[in-house]
Length: 259
Image 1 (spheres, rainbow, N blue to C red):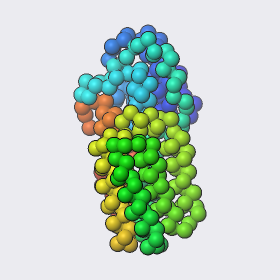
Image 2: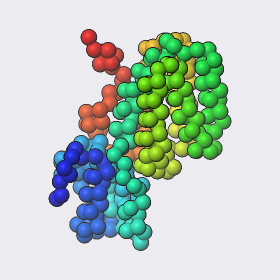
Image 3: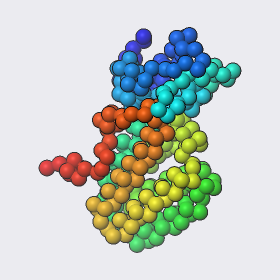
Image 4: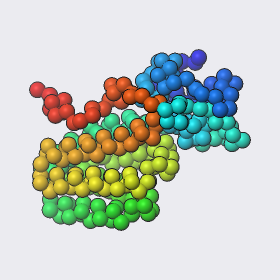
């Protein structure tokens, strides 16, 4: 089995699994090895395997049946679909990890700097986003971005602002895998309502000018996103190793502020 020369990422692993599918190793409808077996075979984390399977599922090459496993779905369009998603080095779990670390701390600092006019603008954006629930998915996404970027802008720190903007433009809005996830799954009314509730908690923490509450609110918001993504990609009816996902279940203040 061909080895990747650099640290494995979901895209390279996905391509290698794809080659197995079309090499005749698996027949249409066949069950693939378990998530754990795939991670061992490709010498990578289960998080990377999940991202790879999400990519293949969005391409229509595999079907994930909760509690049953991963199955090869061969259709007349399978060969064409092999190339519908261009390469991206950033997977959704990796993106959420970065956001959880960076944006939670940006919000903590923003709570000490934010002006009344900026709080009012955030409230207006939140109201517009709420009106788009179960409506225009692209508009909802744009307002979501605007909400988070406004928080960064309230820090008056150009480095933090650029980090927030780049994170959205390069690894979210311009990320083909994330776009496909958003188009197929993440625009559900239930999820949009959850994101709005999270945003309200973030806004309240900023209004209270509490760094701890602002940090925790953003951390939990992204934790909720991670949990939903895990639910969508639940390959097996088992608990994944938490250290594979680089996330804590709750925000660890001791970790965030080491002595």
